[in-house]
Image 1: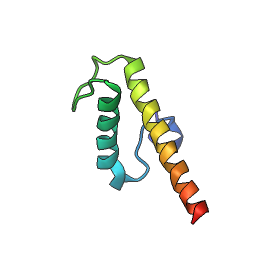
Image 2 (image 1 turned 180 degrees about the vertical axis):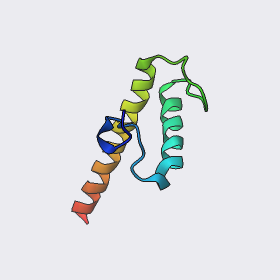
Image 3 (image 1 turned 45 degrees about the horizontal axis):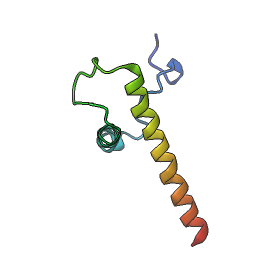
Image 4 (image 1 turned 45 degrees about the vertical axis):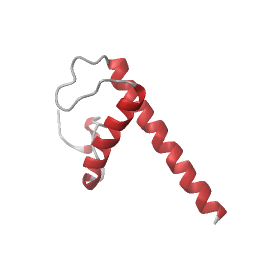
Length: 75
C-alpha cells in the first residue's frame, strides 16, 4: 500500500501543530462520555466505543464551528 494522500488513510492530522490539542480533546471527549480511553494501547476497547469517541469529537467540532459562524454573522 502506498503512503500518498489517496491511500484512504483519513486518520491523520492535517495541521501537525494541532496534534497535541487533538489528543487532549480526544481524552476530554472520552472522559465526558464514559469511555475508558488511556494513553498507549487501547485494544481492549470495542470498535463501538472508539467510534463513539470519534463521532462525538466531530459533533463537538461542528457545534463549535456553527457557533463561530453565527457570531461572525451577528457582528
